[in-house]
Length: 140
Image (cartoon, rainbow, N blue to C red):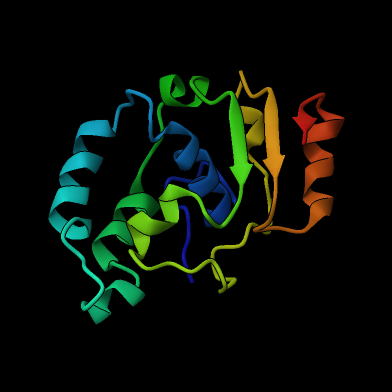
């Protein structure tokens, strides 16, 4: 359904996990994301049924986003959890119950040179965490 068109990661769901860890950082895409959020995400209220559907412009933004080496170096921890902010940027009323954004592969995590910790709660099969533990990255 969705894909990482930048080619950095095999799995779009994993790319979202990585981007989520960068939302509070100053990144190469911070300014553009703020503009996209203001234009397409902000302003939804409980009476707006569109909030229960993916925002095509936001999906396209994240699919096409190419993270720089500097962005990737900022990632120190990842959180696999359907309650993270990134999902609300795609669908304002995301409930975390669907599985189309679940992570099927973490291939590409090797491009995160400063990754130290992974919080595993949901959004993927627990077996995927073995890649991190085998690389000496703490999984909690």
